[in-house]
Length: 304
Image 1: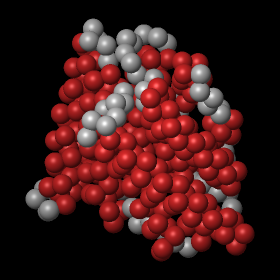
Image 2: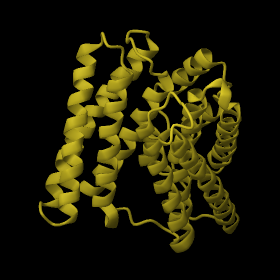
Image 3: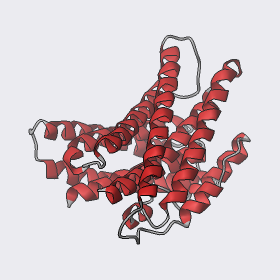
Image 4: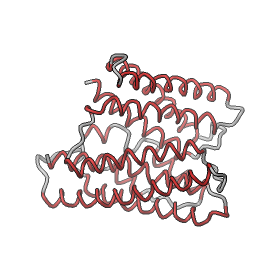
């Protein structure tokens, strides 16, 4: 049990810790000069998640699964270049040493884990719970301000809501690990599918809305993916109510997610090669690609 607790905790942080630090970065970029206090707080969150991720990476070598390391949910072939380009565009210091260290991680080769490692991971989980909770409150405050016309930000209100839902899922999973020592992902397969299908639909809509108006072909592709994943979200919810078979939804979601993963990979590469006209920061492309890779790993698990 302790081995599973350590592995699942570290894999969760390797994926979601990076997602949270990038959420903080995207928020930081979106504020106007008037809201410098919010810009600074977002920057603090980004640095705090950098620190958390650094700790996690140090403990992960030889402990996390080959599946997680090979999935492309932790880093992709584009992550390092996307970080360098995003740092160049913004002047914000993005520590690439974490990414380089993640590329070097070796998969699990130990039969057991020490009590010392279990204790260290439990402490990291507690630290993460506090940090994620604070970030959720920060996101809630921003969204409330935006919806009441108290604040202007370059991030869509839906994007702020979207990243809040992801943070709540992360928080819920860390709390589950602390409470029962493991997460039974298969037991909540349909809820996960409904959640991530909705996320994929919204990614498509964000991409659609951040492309230059001249990028009509990409606009239409993104629009089609948005519609497809809206339907898949509905189907997953229907499967939860036993209206349609579970395996049918998983199969369709897997096929669509492979397709959107390929689209996101090409789009990220296009952004890095300066071949796409848009207002998409390259790290956002890589960020959405990693989330598609994470969903693919879950779907393959559910399929089996």
